[in-house]
Image 1 (tube, one colour):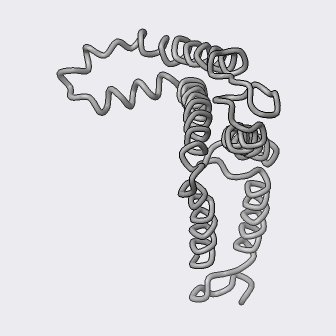
Image 2 (tube, rainbow, N blue to C red):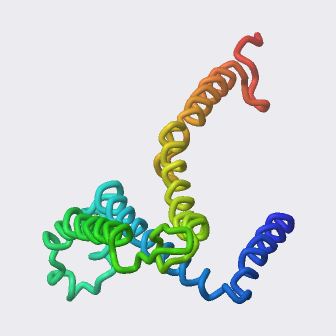
Length: 194
């Protein structure tokens, strides 16, 4: 693990050292505009969908009720929380994300840069694409890649083993069961002895 930690720390140090230059505040402005805005909205949307639809709104409400003191449990608005988790939250965040994207491409934050392109704050196009949109596309793309890979291997939750592992476990259980039937315990006499 020392090599992994050293390599990661070195890469992050080299990435961070750019922010100490004279253009560091401009680069931080670009990264701070794109990454928190779009990544956080995307993560919030995914959390709503996964908690309400995959984990289950009913199970989540049951968890909330289990954590609440007994005298407060009667005041938990179960129906309202269910509607908020399943519909209001995802629709609201989707709307905010859509409006942010529309504003990103047609809003007041677009200023014409030296090469004639309208970009956020008038910063150079390459920097805006690499540092701005790259900080959004890479994590979101990795999320979708992970979901597709998990779906293809059959693993959808941490508790659920891969399909291949289940097949191997079933095969090994069948083999060990047959082997156990043919062997006698070491301290018992064999039934075939006279």
